[in-house]
Length: 430
Image (cartoon, rainbow, N blue to C red; front, side, top):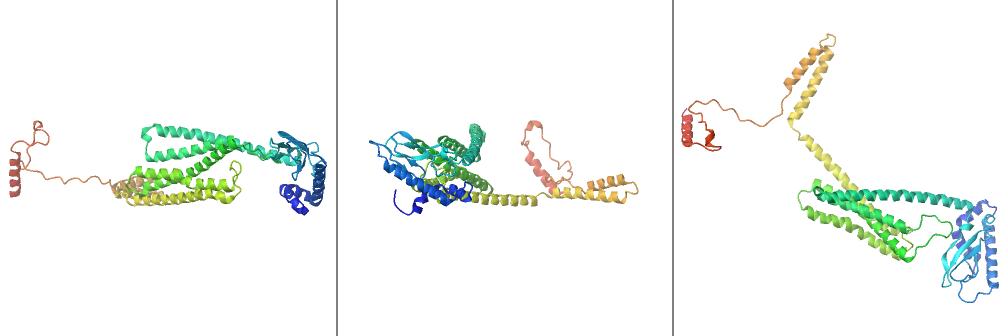
């Protein structure tokens, strides 16, 4: 153990046992923080004296040491060592029969974790169990939700792909959006299979993933983040396509669809790949499911927030376009509709006035009949196609000669042009 002031040796214990010291300060276990530190210092000194008095075993073995929590004796390789719960704990009387467990590797090195769950405060263990039960239920709920979503999206994808009448640019965009949600659900379900059960774990007994499972879990985590980004980019594509239908006129939909595919599937890679590189260099811990460094997490969050903001602005723009088109259509409605509505309104108004004036005389029915007739006289029919003015009656000389059915449609009999010329001359002379 290095020599130095006592407070330097006590820093690791302060960091790992902050809740224990806060509880000791309250006096709930009959000890203060100063008394707890004195007991811990005496335990550490006794551990050092014991290890110095014991001769190390011959051959390969894990060294005896004090890990700032409990005193470990020499242990044989490929064995699990155990030590009694340290007596300096305020609740030692409740866990006097418990043990701290630690694995000694085949190379004579201690494992990275120890299991001191048997030495935990009983009240704290109960709180851990309640939190773990809540997390397990939440995991079951969202697992069922993702499974149902995956099945329904697969059915919708088959319907859109099977029927030829549904094949268009709009439905192609829907298919890509559904595919991104399906990949997201599949990646999350795969990641949960590779991750250990949800915590929290008392003590230091949190499970550690080995390299093959760790690589697969990180791959599933990367695919999950990519699919989450693809969800938002394809939602942006939906908004851009709807805006183009309302604003743009003409253009090749095939060329536009290629741009949509690049935006939907290519844009997420532009910020997921930098996130993977930075995460591997600066926060390469476990399955990358925890985001302790917030600056690294914002590499993914910032583009998603920008996408949501752009989609919201497009939504506001589309609402403005629809409102303006609706107002323009109302101003261009035919006059006969306005006349019909004015006639109906005037008829109802005249009926109401007549009933008020003649209610005492008992002739309301007659007034209603008169008002209906007056309304009918003011009502105008909708304008129809223009008709040609009826030609005046012609004399037998100017009347055209009738054609027989044997002469065919669109055919004139022989001498018809001469008759027509004669008729024109007679008409001019008259």
